[in-house]
Image (cartoon, rainbow, N blue to C red; front, side, top):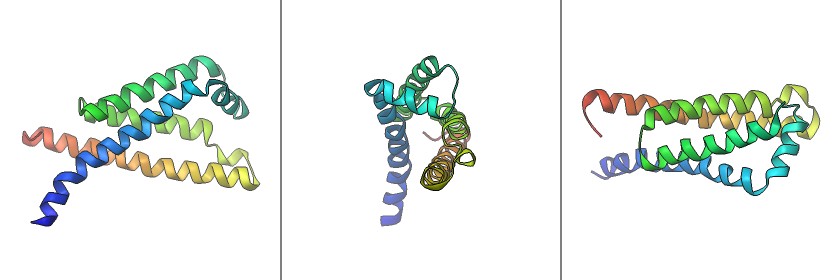
Length: 134
C-alpha cells in the first residue's frame, strides 16, 4: 500500500524536479548574462549572445512545459536535445586538463544522468498515453 502511494508521487515529483533543473538555469542565464557569455567564449562557442538567448528561452519553455505537465513527452525529448548540445559544446572535458578537466567531466556525466531521467520520463509518458492514462 505504501509503495503504491510512493509510486504515484514519484513521477510527478521527478517531472517537477526536472522542470526546476531547467527553469532555474534559465533565470540565471538572464540574471548573469555576461558571466554566461564569458563561459561560452571560454569554450569557443560561436555566436554566444544569440545562442545564450535561445538557451534561456529553451530553459523556460521546456521547464515550463514539464512543470505544467503539458506535452511532457515532447518537452522531455527537447530537454534531451538541449542537454546533448550543452554537453558537447560547454562540457568539453577532452579540451581541458587538471581541475578544469575534472570539473567538466563531472558536469558531462551529471548531465548524462539528467538526460537519462528525461528519456525515462518521455518513455513512461508515451506508455501512459498509449494506455489512455494521464
